[in-house]
Length: 151
Image (tube, rainbow, N blue to C red):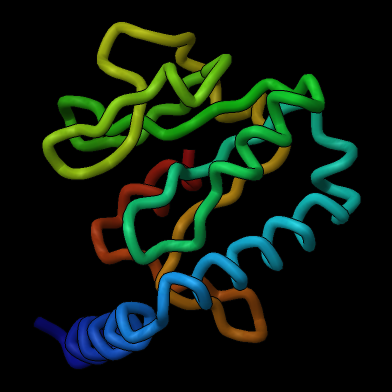
């Protein structure tokens, strides 16, 4: 392992510990604040299609954003991890179209939902552990979204 890899691993561990230390009330308040901010952004209001992750425990909650996208008539896509451990964008019509996987993720089951070409997605909201002031993202560590974004 490289020193940079070790530094990222230590930073992820530290920041995840800080998130776990938050009370559920604080996490809920911050998630609502983030959702209000995102809903007011011009890229959101102008987007006809959005892709967002469905939160797992400890992440910024995104269900309110998913509901808003659907209510606003946007095409809503969520990630699904394929058998080759890659992410594909899948359009859903309701949060009832997803189920919890053995990995603990919420995604449409295999064979359900329309797989969408990433080029057709106008706005993506993806999970991360941290973002610096220049917009550099420290992801969860698996590289799934980095590979998806490269496509």
